[in-house]
Image (tube, rainbow, N blue to C red):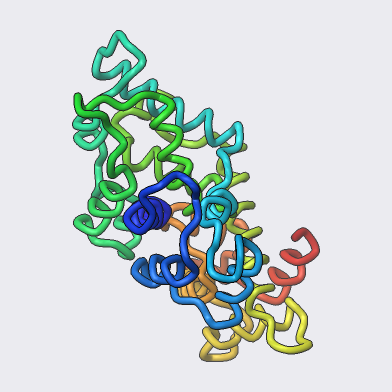
Length: 284
């Protein structure tokens, strides 16, 4: 969630003018300094797409494509957080303070901290970096700036809108407890599960080898984690399979997905992956 802000700060250091153009070498250097390592083919394709001439690239257009504008649904949810903080801190003007934004954020409740992927310290560092420079010299944040900075954070959830909403509601749960107790209703929960399913389908297509089908690709991965060849997985095996394809979600929502597809056998829950795969790609 902090990558976009890191790139913005990186480009601002190598380019002090407002042309949005840097040398190709400077462009690639900024990417590498932010742990974005590209192959020669990938680098060449990006430079060809955004080149100004043989030596320079329009990084501003690259950033626009990398970080698209907020959808109306995302903007509405982010604006809701801004308004909740403003009301909670009793601000009469259309501003909030950076110190309030940070003090009201419960870093240890970040979804990735709860799932064990991040430490609380790392989550704090990511969020503080993502908001680096958002406030003016009076510590004030306008709604316009708030939405602008969240545009970069939103890019961290390109396929999964509900994961972005969960991030907001978990980290600033003290605010959202006043709005439906910070929980999704049934319709929202179903949408969230569908977002994870869609992400799995997309990630699977990215992992296809040669001429194999998407069904075969995902089946191969499920069978890898089905170490006893039982044709089904338990919850832990199911989660490991999805994570191996880069599909990450908080435990609560991953459990919702597993429960949607699993069969209950006594005190055991079993997800038979062949019918799951078939139905997944029939829908996505």
